Length: 99
Image (tube, rainbow, N blue to C red):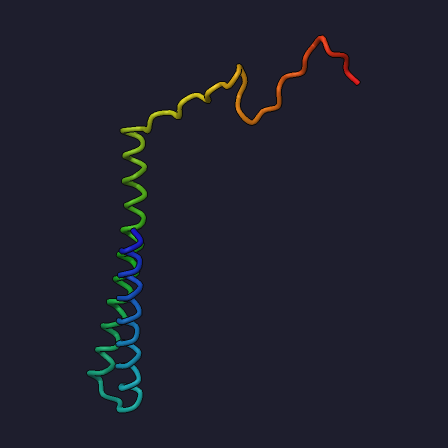
């Protein structure tokens, strides 16, 4: 997914730059063709953004469906070392008096 996001970010920057370039040409000259090209590049930018968002959403939906149909195995039970879990303090000796 990282490559999809990087590619979409590059395409977004390029189409926005082209749109800004044609918009500045339109602002400077007043030619209608430049305005139409600026609008079309901006619309392609919107298509790229919405397409990337849809890919991200449907990837998550597909992963959730996969997890529902084929769930992962549960983690193994913790291994006991000398009768207790690792990282826990040893149990108190009942024969030893408390302070």
